[in-house]
Length: 462
Image (cartoon, rainbow, N blue to C red; front, top):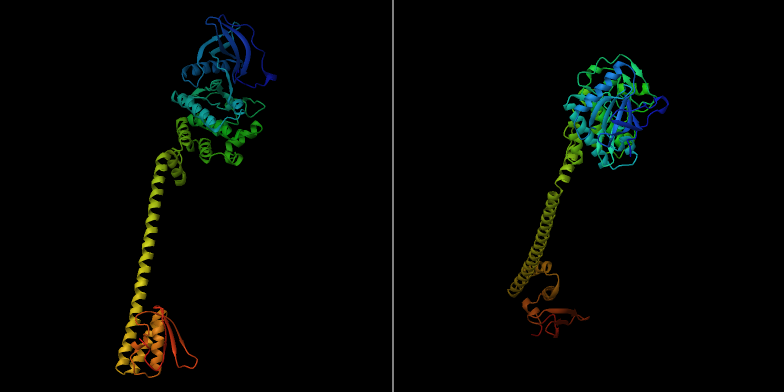
């Protein structure tokens, strides 16, 4: 596909007639700031080339065309179209022969809906071209999507160096705007040189002596803005746009497209800062931050939050982080297992301690019951009753409680017999005890299987 220029056909001059001894002109494929571009046949080498033919009048404009040819010829870079020759047509019109590259403008390419990765890739290579040009002390001054070409095989080329000048040599171009196009996205010539929607504030104010590589950085930021948002940062009539540019008033990218990554918005805002001192110092610095964004590293020339830095670090070291998380999970599981085992052991120890305490309590109750037995045998019934009450407070269940109940019944009769006689089943446990309705007999059932009837006033049978 040929390069997609959309010239204003109403005021375009007719194609020049004739050719040179070497080049045979074909169809017109575009219009730039200073000339028209045609396909041509190089008759000597039998190849197609692009011929840019000067279209403006006057010696000053002719000098600018020659300057463009000389500047472009100095830029030997993969992102700049090679220049083959500067010459004149048969009618004396100057021309520039260049390599013909098939492709489309960045503006047209953007309509295809490329991915964010593709858009950032194009921006990175555009920054490379401008970093090279700035290193050669050349300013472009008219950076915009229409002047960046995407080739059929993914090449990225910065085109139309018609307003390019060596850094520090951009004065003496007049004190007024010689021509306005009907669109703010078309190139304007004169002291205010460039395209309003993409030019820097110092260009818009005509402060040509202050232009340096940061002025082109502004244009790179405006291109990135359009790559992200899908529209230029400024829109409207040229004079209105110029005033907006001077004031630095435009909507932030995320105000128009909230899904744009915050870091890319920050890159745009830094590149398009109103004051040159607040912009990137070079296209290389802007490229470094684009690289950092895509590698998920903190931006080199901008401050990132600790959360962003931590997130990007984790992404870059995701294998190590994944392994670390795995180790941490194992450690957590081991810790939880240890805590669970500790809790089980503590619970077991507590149950054992409670069991031992209950046993000690029962032994104490039995000891008090034995004391009551001994005191009763000595005839000390008052003391025996006190010891028995202490035993009763402790021995509240089972056969021990039954023995205490029988002992109480004998002591209630002031029986001189020792309490040991209250064990009608010997050492076998008593399961149940009942007193006859007339109170004359006590029945007891023991674990030895015997049912024993006793006179509460006499010792029970052994």
